[in-house]
Amino acid sequence: MDDEVFRALADPSRRQLLDSLNRRDGQTLAELCAGLEMARQSVSKHLAVLEGANLVTTLRRGREKLHHLNAEPINAIADRWINQYDRRRVQALADLKTALEQEPVSDNDFVYTTYIKTTPERLWQALTDPAFTQQYWGLRHETDWKVGSPIDWVMGDVTMSGPGQEVLEYDPYRRLAYTWHHITPEFARAVEMSDELAAKTSAEPLSRASFDLEPDGDQVKLTVIHTGFQPGSAIREMINDGWPQLLSDLKSLIEGAVKSGATVDQ
Image (cartoon, rainbow, N blue to C red; front, side, top):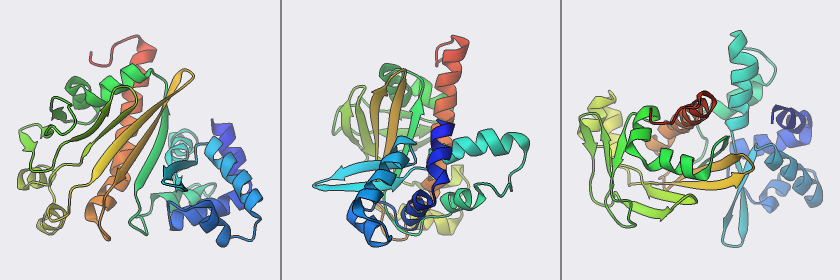
């Protein structure tokens, strides 16, 4: 996959497309073409290469096809080629890496795609079984997983629950969605939020997180979509760094268990 990413990044037009999506995520083909001096067919070809390298994820919204920047391959390259040599300020890829790690400049949906070497059944269990989520997330979900049922988020001695916090979709091995939790005073104290941040986040409406699982050979393509944020959302800023780390921990847990021959919940 590294070779595909490097090839995709080698073309200045494709880097320009990534820059455009970094400035404003979730654009249509027409919107991307409008900002570039390229023919529509050329833009489509470049987007296909970027999507093939997992640098761009597409979503359908009615008749529109929206393109989202996906930072996962850049994070993987940084881990392999930069961090292991402790060269965190290496200029190669630095501009793009820095841009991807900046706070979002708009309040678009958060979209992140990663590939995990596992089966849909094992990944589904890791997303829903409390014994699994406790290992990489540090919390568990208490629910019967029926659509419309309440879902409590339990982190140690702290329980986050409240009106509207519920299971939204439950299609085993394919799609899962639920309401993101209430920011309770107990949770704010547990994660050492400032009083100002706690007040701001607790006043925000509940958001929605969904997980799409798609088999791809001996891997599963996992796409996480977090949506429903107000302009200037503090929670949106928080999850921008939180999701990549969480999904990296999930990937490490599952693939590490596969390599060792252990089960995930051991």
